[in-house]
Length: 382
Image (cartoon, rainbow, N blue to C red):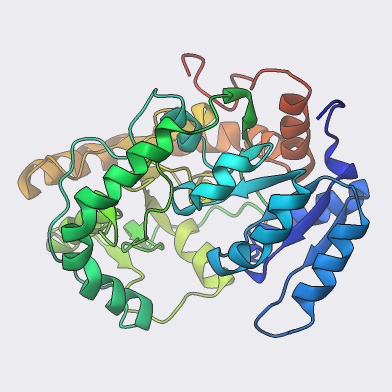
């Protein structure tokens, strides 16, 4: 574009997929700036797609696609191929279709790992060969289908990676298109800081089963439908081996879905809350949420993101240690927990400031204006 892109002048097209509570603070901050927005509801409103197409043809505003599912993107591709003038928000960047990542003017990454991998500074997953089979966490259609399709996906892996290699060779080389757009903390959603007596030594309040089809050319098809949350799964499984000997452990998996209030209560009552970025080391809001509730994290620190949280995380490598070795690490974690909790309380207000929705939008706008990402958000070496 010949002029600087301004976020408030863009027309944001959202899917119900991006109306999850963690994304709504960003949407409200955009609306406060005066940005236009449209909710594409193809499943529930048949007229939603034709109406959007009419709007796009009549407007020359830059379009930002936020959270659209592959089917929704396919439906819009013919018009955007002619109209152009669009950018794409990448949530789970490894699932993003090739055509869009090639032709979008800008790519806004919720997870910095996508930029690092695209720039050749990191790999999607380091040193892990996924097994043939995995055990679904929930008996839901998608998990069952993914586990069933894993053997076929492994057979197709070499051929799909050949296609991905060609796509990488034909990719747009301009790295200035790739901008960091982290998910903010929702200050209104977080409860007031309450320090409660611990009921659990360790808690797992998140998913331990993450399976996807790798559409992005920079994510190998080797990981199609593999559980790339295997590190989380193994860590909580080992913790449960020692439950009562001597640990108290909370595991969300056998329970119904937690309400937000229940989730916050468990985190506040835990000495540590388990979090990793998965084997692909992707940032997730739970890191920020746990620390803002005054609870240290046990898991893995991320290689690029959240430098402010470094002293709030007890690092443990669940993939290379034996259960007995992990038990030694867990004992060590409990010994240093009071100090890490102090660190959480010390950085809480700074985290809320850095990851406020309006501050995150300004971070993105600054990058559009040619400014670098501040070291508060990304390790200086990155």
